[in-house]
Structure formats: structure tokens, C-alpha cells
Amino acid sequence: MSTLGQAALYGGLGAVAGIAGGLLGALVRPGDALQSCVQHFAAGVVLAGAALELLPEATRLGDAGAILGGFAAGGLAMAALKSLTSRLERRGGQGSGGLLVATGVDVFVDGLVVGASFAAGGTTGTLIAIALGIELFFLCLASVREVGEGGGRRRALAVTGAIALMLAVGAVVGAIAFAGAGPDVLAVALAFAAAVLIYLPTEELLGEAHALSDTAVGTLALFAGFGVFLAIDLAAG
Image 1 (cartoon, helix red, strand yellow):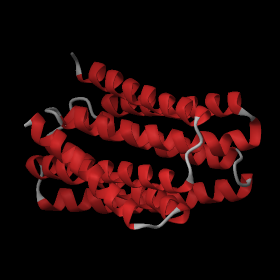
Image 2: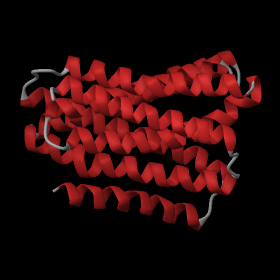
Image 3: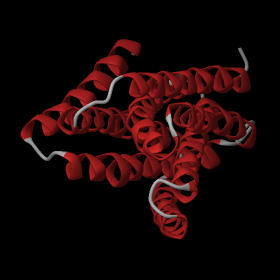
Image 4: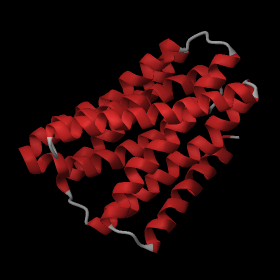
């Protein structure tokens, strides 16, 4: 299968995971403690993807300058994006269009990471897609409740479904953008992507999780998520 086909397939599967999370969230309302635990778990999975897949692959492809430059650019870009989306949230109000646009942009950026990872070859794209699919499942599980409070269950499912599809769109765009890129360009892209994957769970998932419930169980869930991805990575060789 071509790189574009793989990105579309796994990006689509990740989107399906997000839609499934939205459906489950519409049927079952998790308590604050449980939601905090699953968000810690998802954060652990995504952080492991950055540490165990993206950065080692970037190191293999490029030199130190390219990797450090890409990583710094990723961190700065996400800080700028956070500033922009925060303004959108304040302008639109809590639970309104601004918040939804911010979430959709975050998921689209995740999709770009998936596309760039497949362009690098090997198992990196598959494993990163798995990690982000897990993250999206729990993100939609939590988001459907917030959206539903302002507009009903059907609207919540439609909105979270649209957000989930942004992962597939981003994956295709990323695969096209980096098709045929040389090792140095891919090294910068993967280092940039690693910064994105470190920033998003730290800023979004863990920040919200600690606000809901800050217990030792959540910390254990974080390590459990990291360990699950580590086991998958080892099994994939």
C-alpha cells in the first residue's frame, strides 16, 4: 500500500475511534475521577509515542541541528497556536464555536503528525496512529458531554464526529506534504511532531484531568498508558 493509502487508512481508523468515543460518551457519563484516569492514560500513550518513536526516528534521519531546530519550532508553534485558540474560546464563550474550532485544529495537527510519520517509513506511522487514535477516543468521550450540555445529544455526536474526521484529513494532508521528502526534512518534521505530541497531552489532557481529579490513581494511569505503548512498540520490533 502507498504511503498516502496508509495515512488515509490509519487516519480513518483513528477517526472511527474518536466517533466511537463520542458514541460511548453519549450513552455513559463518566464521573470526574474516571474521566481524569482515562485522560491520564491517553496522555501516557501519546507521550510514549513521542519518546519511543518520533524522536528516535528523527535521530536516525538527521543531525543534531535539524532535530533541535525542529523540536524548538514545534514547541513555539504550539504555544502560538494555544494563544490563538484561547482567544477564539474567549471570543466565542465556553462550550461554543470558539472551543470547537480550537479542538478541531488540535486534532488536525495530530493528523499532520500521522501523515509525516508515514512519510518517514517503517512502523512509525502505524504506531503513532494507534497512539493518537487512543487519545482521540478519550478526547471525544470527554468532549461529547460538554457539547451536549449546550445543544443536545444529536448535535454533540455530529460535532465530535466532525472533529474526529479532522484526524483523517490531517493525515492525508501530511502524507501529501511530505511525500518524497529527504531525510533532513523528515528529521525536522518528526522532531517538530514530537514537540506537538508532548505539548498537546501536557497542555490539554493533563491540565483538564488535574482539574477534574488529582489523585495517585491518575498518575498510575499515566504510567500504564506509557507502558502499554512501550509493550506495543517492543512487540512491533
